[in-house]
Image 1 (cartoon, rainbow, N blue to C red):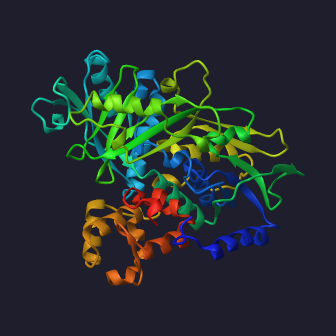
Image 2: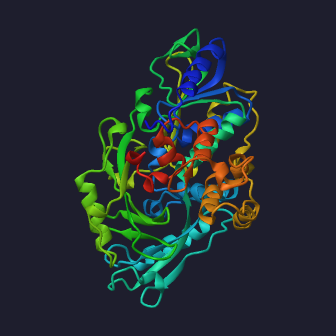
Image 3: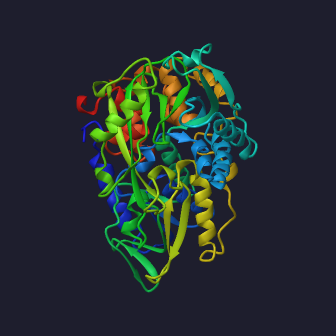
Amino acid sequence: MSPLYANPLVNACAGTILKNNMKDKIYDLLVIGGGINGTGIARDAAGRGLSVILCEQNDLASGTSSLSTKLIHGGLRYLEHRQFKLVRESLSEREVLMRNAPHLVWPLRFVLPHQVHLRPTWMIRSGLFLYDRLGKNQTLEKSEFVNLETSNLGEPLLAYMKKAYAYSDCWVDDARLVIANAISAHEKGADIFNYRPIKKLEVKDGIWHANDEIRARTVVNATGPWVGEFATQKPRLVKGSHIIVPRQYAGDQAYIIQNSDRRVVFVIPYEGEYELVGTTEVDYLGDPSDAHLDEYEINYLLDIYNKTFHHKISKHDIMWHYSGVRPLLADEQANPSTISRDYKLEIDTQAGAPCLNIYGGKITTYRKLAEHAMGKLKKYFPQMKPAWTQSAPLPGGDIENYTTFAFDMHEKYPWLPNTLCDRYARLYGTRIDKLLEGKASMADLGKHIGADLYQVEIDYLKAHEWAREAEDILYRRTKLGLHLPLDSL
């Protein structure tokens, strides 16, 4: 851990507060897991009047929730497997998230080059027709045919690709979406603790006891790929890896590339200077914390990319990579790419108190998952208030029009460089005012660490967003690690 980020006083105090202030308290919910499902449930429950404590073994969003393809999407390819309910719910949630977190979720146009030997034209057209119509009140641009021989969208692609289809979905800053939910949960009264593993969990007199210091009436097991450590049913673990390479093409569009194994790979503009390429889908055994990109996955992604684009890439072009493990609904026979991304919620009372286990799910539908979780727990907490999150902006998301908001921030903070102002607006939304409170010049931002990272942001993230280590800041709450290598600090 870099000394720039070390704060032993804060860390020591966090442990003291947990032991002293909570020894005699019985929470309604102990949420184990600080990913998107855990923070989403904590937020929903706290807003309904339940007392909530959330504990995460590492940093918030340090697992699968920061290691995704970073899309809010209906799942076009799920239509091929007749998962219509999941697609419909996902498309509806896409609209909710665009409205409630416009600084973190924004539209992205995808280009799907057509390869007739993989999927016939009628299948692509039918799928896009359904995709444009399954969700309620869709506001994004509809799909369309693209002639790659005349459109600039075809310029990066090899000449044999003559036509394509374009459609709309959304990009998301996945880790910051988790942080926004944690902030909202905390503002509603939830106690949030990262770097707080639950090592001991047992029931005494109908009450859950965790680590001999936390008591709760109900446990929510939202540990993602670790769900089997607290539950009898084990999920099927599938590893997905991504590589990040220097930007090879112009334009804001992303590409979705079909492959002969019936899977697709996304190529997405990333952090201005880069492209995000992924994902793989490989069955995984072992500790999810140990997942890493292997040689097979490198070759798989490079091969698909180089069969599609004029500019070729090699393993030497890989600037960064990451691997996440997804807990899918158990299906030992199915190909990993065909397993449903839907979720299942099960209450286990065998220990003598209820434990709600969360299986599966995807970032797009986390809010609906949280609502369904509250529905499952209603019988234990009949006093809980009604559902409320559908129309409630996430912290920083109280923005009517993002373009207008971004322009207003440039007017409000004219002393900020344009790129820095844009980055602050995207990451923090209206909470930019909290970040820059009392600041009137670049000198007020404190020490310049590198790239566009200043001491004021480090202090803010430690004080308001649970950041404790360099990696928490550089690769989750921001993506500045790509521009400022960790070993340079």
